[in-house]
Image (cartoon, rainbow, N blue to C red; front, side, top):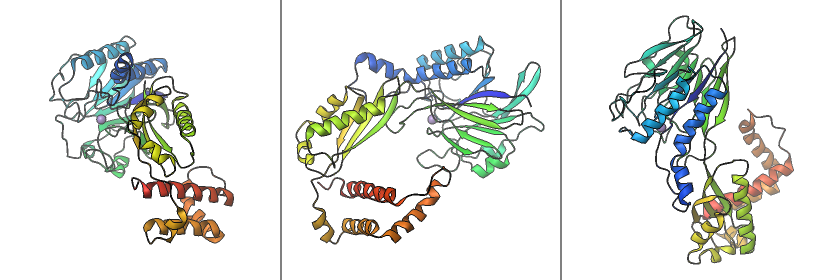
Length: 408
Ligand SMILES: [Mn+2]
């Protein structure tokens, strides 16, 4: 086959509200409020810039069933940019923007091929020849609980066949169980590429025999949607092998700042390390970083942090490095490890276990063996003993923080 390049995006959730930014300036608030629209512009920019053959959007283009007019107009405008360059766009609608919502008949330029409520297949024609076939279906209503994937069938002899599906594949928890399907089912269906949407975290569920891909959403909208967000550029070579390149489209990034008072003796030390960490988080990204901050750990600073208004003050201070959505103080008083060890609690069991591992080389080796499967896929030299001791110490500190969380 001739090489093919397409862009796979999903879950634009255009014009969905951006929460937790009351502290931001009015200008910044506007910017964040239009972040999902700006992220779509970036998807289109990249489609044009990379000279992709076409763009796929796998559902949840709009945030709500009854579409917002501003979102409809923005989407049309972006699609027109692709129409001017004769770039086709294949879209399906998902549980957030089913076909029975207001505005679903809004006219889009002719380069946009919207799949209806019944499974259909469209050819992609390049220079007079079929270069790919795209099969898809839209949600007719919000809740589709039947398996749609099982009715997807590729046409025989298609040069490259793509299926677009908005669904929960692999029963992922934390996501509505819509159009449920298993990875095995998708693998055996005969398509080359499953362009999925619905789960907002990007993941590649399979590469062989089929590519099974969630690109994630194009812009994080709340603290749970942290980190870079974007779409995939898919390059298919002459042998039909696809390779993926992630392209960040988020114009603002969410992040979690996890801070500990464990190794801080004074407030100035803590503030400095907090700001340093916040700057680290926001460096290398040229848009606003919105942080949800949690302070944990046991130590002498716990008392200072109990002062009234402390979390508001810290949020304001953080504002010089990031947009602080909130600061949660979950610290505990300084611990007397020796007396803790003498208690008969889960905490003392935990401490004894880690002490044993630090004193006993054999038990460390067993631990290293148990850890090996975690590194199977990465290139990782054998874990040396000093490294292991350091990890145990860090894990002990972290475990203690979690076990003692809120005990103050
Ligand atoms: Mn979605």
